[in-house]
Image (cartoon, rainbow, N blue to C red; front, side, top):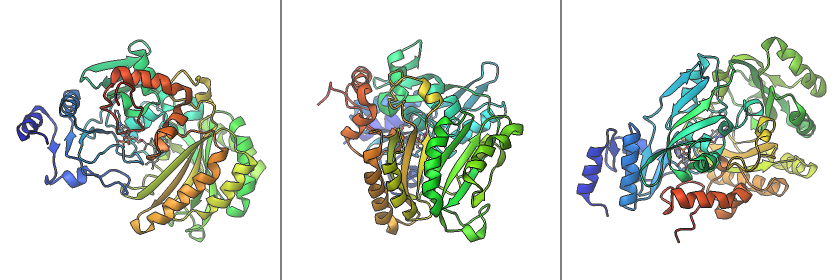
Length: 462
Ligand SMILES: Cc1cc2nc3c(=O)[nH]c(=O)nc-3n(C[C@H](O)[C@H](O)[C@H](O)COP(=O)(O)OP(=O)(O)OC[C@H]3O[C@@H](n4cnc5c(N)ncnc54)[C@H](O)[C@@H]3O)c2cc1C
């Protein structure tokens, strides 16, 4: 039990709101993006600034409270919230400042990728982000971060220059190649294990209009398309990015009515080269696989592409997640994809293969905490539906599909696609970077204050 007087004192120390059960905004504030997660924190602190974050870290440590940190609240496992704990809610800290001369972007710890896209696009700059613009910058970055720009410009962490971190003892430290290099190494893939990042400094890349959109094929062509894709994608120029999907066609424009509700396979492309050369860049694709059943390809501002699927995946859907790193798409793996992919159980459920070759491969496996630099794809198995009555269906499809393909994977998974899958899975993901991560955890968070994450347990505690 925490002394009420101490809570009042803590509340008075904050510039932001402190929400508790019974407060009018409490139920809205405890919701995260995944509707399957229903947690009831003891308190939610809507921090206004770094001073608020420091107060929260000190209060949680001194009162031995479970501490969760919420960036965008998108994590599939619901790791931005915790039962009976204190939530550091950064949703009021979303500032973005672009320095067009230095080509850098300063982003506060609670910003979403749409905030960054909006601010950077005005200057013809971009940071590699994910495929949904409402995702938090912090969680995505700290796990590695991949998306349409990754083959050319690297993972999101490969564009991180510096971060401000409030660590477990309540101090604010800077992490960069020059300062606290061990911490800088660890936060590039090690998730929220090492402290609360209140500010990121990214390199901006010259991207403005891209030539992008989906191509869809009938399922009877899935084997041929997958076999072609595994050869084409890794040797394609780095300007060309395409993620493969099994999907159900949404019943809305731009999809033609005769395809609505149809299960298909597809590739969502993003070409980063000169617009006048775009059709030429797609010519080999059209020559090699022939015309798709449907395509919606053309020039669009990058922020449009990055938010193209936002409306399809609003907050509150029931979601079940599995992930895998894939080095080679073997015949055996393709056979399993062909068995489970066409069985997508609901309109929102999908399986994606996201390319992470190209620029991410130019960084060594020990240069950042993110270990799987040799992986060609990051796979996600995503069971989704608005209706909780379908949870059993989406969970069994996701787990059965993953179980069938996993033996042909690289071993570990992208931490941001994992749910609560245990320490062995976390170790399999970091491989021989795990011991160094534990050593850095011992130094910065010996009591495991930051443990609502894919946890790297310190060896200094039991
Ligand atoms: C629909 C959808 C599509 C996605 N697509 C992609 C994609 O294309 N590419 C990709 O890389 N990922 C993708 N993701 C995965 C995404 O990277 C993770 O869900 C990520 O955890 C989201 O970050 P967040 O800040 O929104 O999450 P939160 O739930 O707020 O936090 C996630 C984790 O990060 C920690 N954390 C959050 N903020 C901070 C902070 N400021 N300091 C320290 N720790 C913090 C939390 O404690 C928690 O452990 C997608 C997710 C969804 C739901």
